[in-house]
Length: 110
Image (cartoon, rainbow, N blue to C red; front, side, top):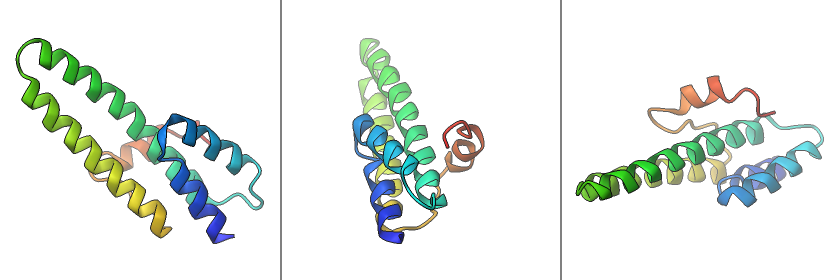
């Protein structure tokens, strides 16, 4: 049971396609794991953050501040990596800075 939850949690961090697959797998999971739900929310929040950061990087590059945009993207990648490692290890580890906000505001995922 725990292995299936860890698999779903890990797959949720691998692109939007992986997230959709993980969501479908969780719907068929019996009993439904809180670990997989936790990581589905964390990874979705990181995808939203990544989209926003990517847009910011594009704008910053356009006004000759591309280095700041790259630093932002590296920070987002680090957060993604922390979330992925937590999923692989089967832990409820929130990503730093935004993990609580994600869990509070992504309640529609479930």
